[in-house]
Image (cartoon, rainbow, N blue to C red; front, side, top):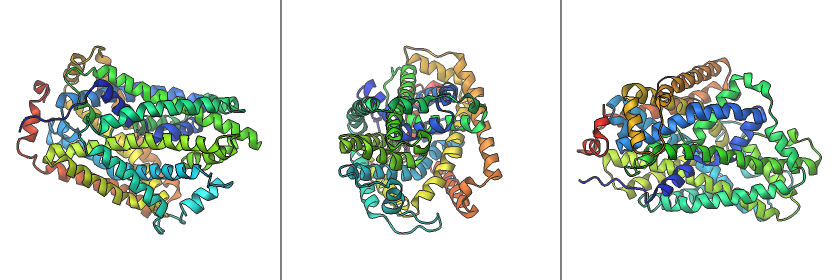
Length: 506
Ligand code: PHE
């Protein structure tokens, strides 16, 4: 069979798709409350350090690795060795069967809230509306309760949209969708920021968002949060950027694209924070409550505090609500499609199954899996699984990526490949960070997270639920081991071997 790997139509198309994957729900509400919870403006320091010490080096690694091996994560790692292939499977499998299952449901909530915006159906008590009327939240993770039909229906819509975009070849589906989604997203966000900044009390909100509390920089948690946020936000350790880079042409400007993706993503988070906090400032002023009392972290920010603020706006409340939730939906879907692509391309590479079938199967399984989070007790499971995937799964994936690429593959050869394809160049500092600095930092976070895990029960959940959460991740690891042992469809590994930079293979 000839090498039929799909290609992006243009570099801009690739950039939009990569930025689309990076910018997601995590940038809009997660970044804002992370910043606010971890010392306001002072959080930008560890965040910036995380960008330089892990974000950019790993982005270069994933782009360079996927591009030189011309394969999805498993195929690229299989070229290093069969043991490494396990990591190549673990990344997209974990993201698909943990993160994506709840992520799609959060996009579904946004879709519901977009509709609620038309008549501000959340009423005056938005907190009770969210937990009691909308989620009908049960008492704990042990009580799964019934399926929430409105959530299930919008989750079905979300998966259907993802399926429609993904089953076509990348250059027709994902690339085209992101070329429309991303400019629209930037435009709508700019409208929201400008609108927010005009409101009374906006400056108070911004002061609160950015006021640096330098004393917080002494805390381990602040640094851990900054690195965790960086990984999640840049979609690193997901296997996505490896797959996306494999569709790039020979001259791909990897260095420039890696810098651009990282900087646009982080800049967007910072910018979107202005919209979030100026509105909170306004709300604090109208309701006469100090701003620190109106802000809540986690899902509370987007689905409790923000709706309340929207209702209080002087005019065009519904329009503002639609705009805000539409932004979340677009950002969420453009991230969601990227993980379907990462796992879909992996399965295609290994088993040469027809794309339409693979994508359909993934979307159907994804929808079925997300049913857990449509249940009344779903939010607890979201919280537990998110804890394990973000604090262990992604960080461990990044750590192992550094070790494999840093030590088993010769970094200077990969650096040469990256530089040969780029106008901007990187130097030996990159090798050093991949071999030593980044794995040291990530390794210490893993040790720290384990220490905290045993020192205190996460959020006070009963041990059995935590064991189920952690056990699910281990099960997925076992699944990755199992798949990596299956044979590659005749010639697929070998054929890809010669596709690009064959001499780089170790
Ligand atoms: N980078 C995304 C975000 O910040 C995270 C994500 C990517 C989640 C892909 C799922 C799939 O929201």
